[in-house]
Image (tube, rainbow, N blue to C red):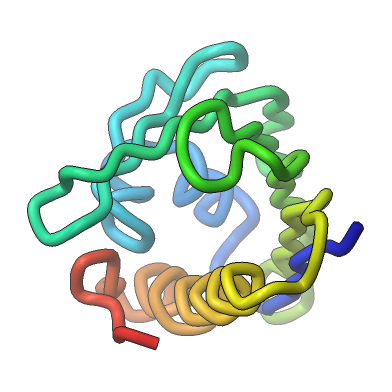
Length: 144
């Protein structure tokens, strides 16, 4: 088993980072169009593809305001992986965000693609959304 791991510093408060990971409009502004109630046990639906025709469903399994967000893929390409965990810590520059998507069977081409895309979405899209006011969500992300 292998995991996707990322850590970035964002010049924004833990509250703003948490909001970007739980709020429908904020998720849509840095990753992909989202629909969510934002409650533990509810589903976050994300829409990919040129017209949003590919739906991914994540169950929210844990929420600790301004500290942690956890999802489990229940519909889409990551159902065979374990948890998606976002951990937020205060940092002298704002917040340190740690991300893991655990339980990959192997580091195959899809794993490498997802690792690269998460890197882009965190270090460019999410960071720019919170620091400069504008993200680069799907379908406006680069084709890597």
